[in-house]
Amino acid sequence: MRTLYIDCGMGAAGDMLTAALLELVPDREAFLRRLNGLGIPGVTYVAESAVKCGIRGTHVSVLVRGAEEDEHHGHHHDRHDHPHSDLDGVAHILRHLDLTEKVRADALAVYESIAQAESHVHGVSVKEIHFHEVGSLDAIADVAAVCLLMDAIAPEQVVASPVHVGSGQVRCAHGLLPVPAPATAYLLRDVPIYGGQIAGELCTPTGAALLRHFVTRFGPLPAMRTSAIGYGMGKKDFPAANCVRVLLGQTEGESGDVVAELSCNVDDMTAEEIGFAMERLLEAGALDVFTVPVGMKKNRPGTLIRVLCAPADKEKLIDALFRHTTTLGLRENLTTRHVQRRRIETLDTPLGPVRVKKSAGHGVSFSKFEYEDLARIARERGISLAEARHLAEEALL
Image (cartoon, rainbow, N blue to C red; front, side, top):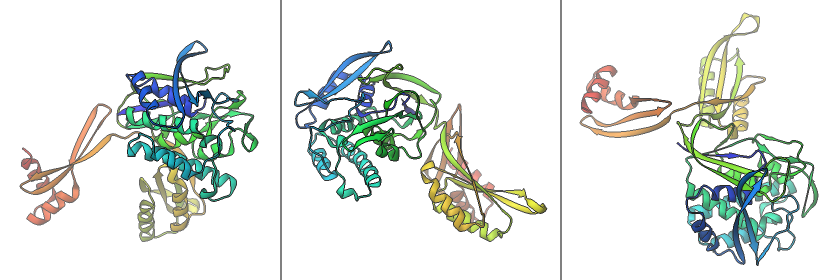
């Protein structure tokens, strides 16, 4: 599987992500010309070689009418020269850029997530939100560039490390704010983040929104055969190399998929009630629900109900567990599951259409007929399921 890994050990910002991804593109000069042909008013992209702690990478500057923005924190953040923009204003600019509909939709979705974060932080509706730093032309340029680069690189999955957010305070249009800034913190909810000894803002709102939109999951570097590596440099110098590193390569299947595991024990529910609860949990988005017989207090036989779900769906599954079971408490863990690539093929046979489920990865592969199709054949012909499977196998010879 074509996998992009983003190392956020020094945070993430739009310009640094742009620079790192640009290093993965085979013809960087041609892509830079493509960026400068987007049509962002008065904006020019400039890519230069940069060295941080002995590591050579790329720094991308966005010039607005020939000048680069002031950078107080190493990333584009403190911008007071441009008028504030609302979501409609940003959407208007994006509609007039030379972008495909998919890339334009990605860029607008990034800004919508920022607007939701600002709405939550300031307690006003999305329509009342005015972007400050992230609404300026160079921020729009960063978002458009990353969305265009992600479309060109076309990874099948994007994995990112836990995000280093920095520490201390950051100055923005509203004054001094704690790091991570409130909007950044909201955008990074349910994402593993950490601080450290480095004072300053390492992850900007723009960087957080881009990560939230494109990253499939957060975790360690998966086992992968790397084909290209990119380093996107910030301007400020720190004791550690101020860069975002990206690695592009092939992984087997979807190894290392992080899921939430919710568990509870009950000893006062009937089999019918448990079955009904399992149906509701699956309808609520659970990836899997299963039960295990257990011994409980006072030597009572009971049932362990376990739910697997995407971390983003965790809260609604917790609500569903409390609503549809009699439990008074539950346990939560984040765990890693290893799955194979899966697909279903529909084959035309003399027996009618027969679906075959195929899986592969980690050096093995499997295939099996869809149960419902075998059951249909068995019912139609008055034969056993095993005989129906044999007929289906013969039909494919």
